[in-house]
Length: 486
Image 1 (tube, rainbow, N blue to C red):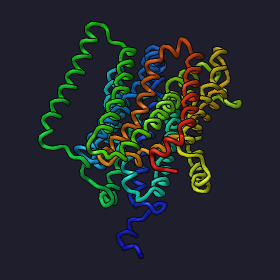
Image 2: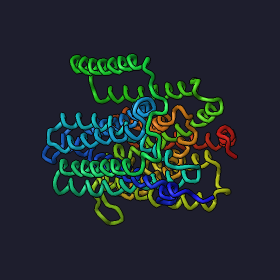
Image 3: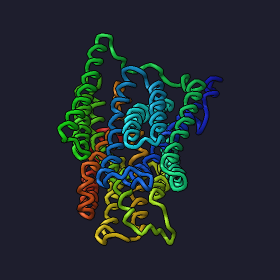
Image 4: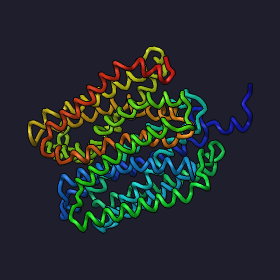
């Protein structure tokens, strides 16, 4: 059968829809702005005023940086709900991009702590809207599992190219011109990304994707939802001012609250999906099998995202020498995406050539999780040696966790898309990002423990993933059968 002229015209990169590169460009811009800003966020918070920073305590700096990441990924739940029930994924990406752009512009202004808090709030809301839904758009423009594997691999490469380039660019600007000029680079790139998406949506995407929300909110529900939203906002504002007035507010208390909230949201959403009448028994079985995937994500992101918070602080204790070269603290953040880009490309070839000979899905997760644990084992020796250790240890650790990430994260986007019930597509993608929120929330809550007991912290974070990997190996056959694969 010969493809129609319209179908042929819609073919583009690797045989995918022509609008697909638009999605890649949007994700590149968002990740460039996120990782570029985060590469220097900790140092902006803890550096002295003479160094251009805010001069806050190190424990608060690590906690705030982790909280920022945790709240960003927690807010994907809201973004997923808004997409599924009101706007649809295509429109919500634009709205989120505008919030992100505004957040980076505010952070580029030299207004101290007030600008920092306002910026983080805008970035958290905006990324929560954009992040899960731009991933959902990838699934919307592919027609089968074979295309999905290619599409999500390319998508992940775009993420990590942005993550690799941004610390280099932003760190260089920060060293030469200061923090606020560096933050403005994130704003410029996000603005370009938003323009690319708007053009691509109008030209291609609107012809390839469903515009409306898949499970639109009913008129009878609107008033209830509005009052719940108002109530939550009022409750949050009142709680904040009461805690400040009673002098009970602290970054540590907020960290604990966010971590607990992330765990409770996880339990709530899994329970809601598994008890929903809109989900078939076959879909529910797949969601149960997805829970270990989620737990793998928690272990991965606690360590991988710790590279921008925990390890970002740890590298300041090193001698900054890597194979004889002096490296800036923020440059360390380019190690992970550099390895991931090439590792993902290699694994894409491996998946293609050795598809019938590879371990099953959950066995591959087990190998990835084991590498995550090993990466922190490598930091035990320098942690016990005190200050002035070689930065080679940190580079090696970041490289190992990156290989673990290659085995877990790229396929998790496709797995989430494949196992998601039809009525909860965007919200299931948000649940995957919620694993990141739980992992970073734990980092924020344990920031004080890390600073006081660094070696023990790395030991615990190494042991838990290794034990979980063993459990996945033991139950891999049963889990594979639950998702209907050989």
